Image 1 (cartoon, rainbow, N blue to C red):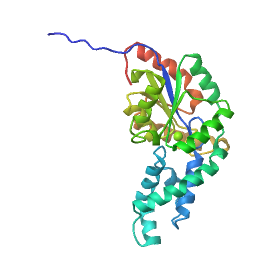
Image 2: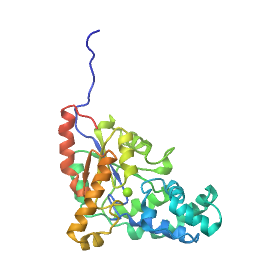
Image 3: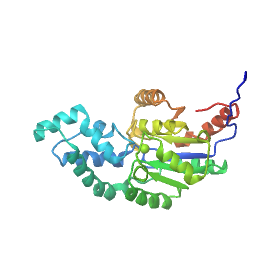
Image 4: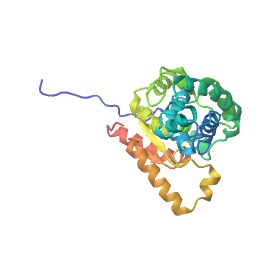
Length: 276
Ligand SMILES: [Mg+2]
């Protein structure tokens, strides 16, 4: 046969999958960062906020393991304990992490400004709303009820603990697609504030949008962000945008509030036969 024909999806987006901390709530993604710092402090190995934030987006136990594997942390652990941190240490810190995180989670549950308006826009376009997170089930239960009190209720939520592996693997996204009953995967878009979260969406074959300003990349609360000198903010944002584009994000914006016009843009691209 001389000619082959390729099927391509030309319809619009059907669903948006939103990350939690740093994307829809907890401006600056502080809740996990402060608890990771506390957990390591209790081990006699203080870590910096940058060390605490580096693996953000991963399953929280994987996150603790990755911190322990950072060269700087591993060396300080060796100095404090006379040996490198091992898997038993990771497990013990994870068990300590869970109640500490549950205790303070509600303090960081305020929605990021623009979230309700963006979600209303997605609904108006007929999009279903799913969500993925590195938090474990008990934490999400608490956050879902806090979010509902504030007017945000996604149609589907999948935690790292509901699937064989969390980010950057795509399983949470695929489970959301099943829960929502939508396909093909190029009819879904993922929005996330971390690099593993961007990879998660790309690995699932979805369009992926990075949020650079409101989450872990800048690591600033709304108040801190507002107080930052404009040129300093511009420099930090430029770096965050570059990191997210280098991770493969199809689009990068400041925050979720900037996503609605991108939805229209992706719909145009899809109509022309483009894929993520
Ligand atoms: Mg996040």
